[in-house]
Length: 264
Image 1 (tube, rainbow, N blue to C red):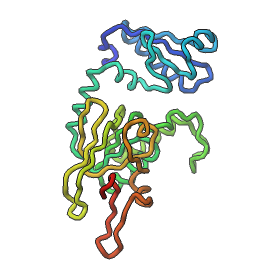
Image 2 (tube, one colour; image 1 turned 180 degrees about the vertical axis):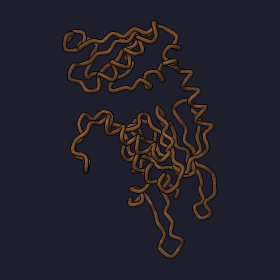
Image 3 (tube, rainbow, N blue to C red; image 1 turned 90 degrees about the vertical axis):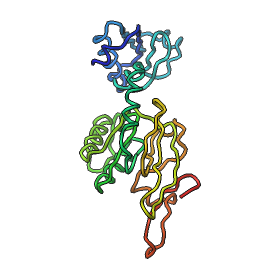
Image 4 (cartoon, one colour; image 1 turned 90 degrees about the horizontal axis):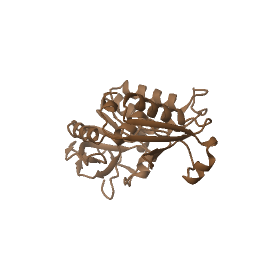
């Protein structure tokens, strides 16, 4: 709330929504709250079905669609934190400095969907220091209306399921870093034989800062596909059953190694 009140500038938001859209309420409520807290923020909510000509002229193909001062600002489901982060550039620099000051993780998981949450829980249960970097914890699950194929759960919805994933992950003291997207993964040499060596690094899109990590695992997610991250995995334990992971014969110091580009 303090961050919203401190925003300086004239912000005129226009939100196109539909009464049948399950993602629209969160965006409408977030922008309405911002308008209540800061007199420099104005929010106009437009029901697209009642203004078809306007929707056609602005080429609005899906809702929610948000315009800021007449220009396209964003589409789809957005959390309040995401909207504020796009407006408050000073806060982004401060967050980047905090990330750079963190100690190296034993495992850093890029992606906060179900695969990332599972990898984090399984790794943390082994006493490994784990960090999860994601734009939104829960990933695409947050945008899912109904879930009926998760074993032992008859029926739930996306946001509720994502909240349960986050609560389970945080119960193991996993460091969850939201509103983060990896800009680049920097490979390194790591000595698995002696468990020593240089730390891999992840460069954030926010502030171009780097964060060290001893080992890294990528969780399959839509965000990784949009960024310049080339190699994707499926978390820590599932990865051990895939061809990307090479193992030595038993009796010779059985070790697993994740493939990293052309190196092992």
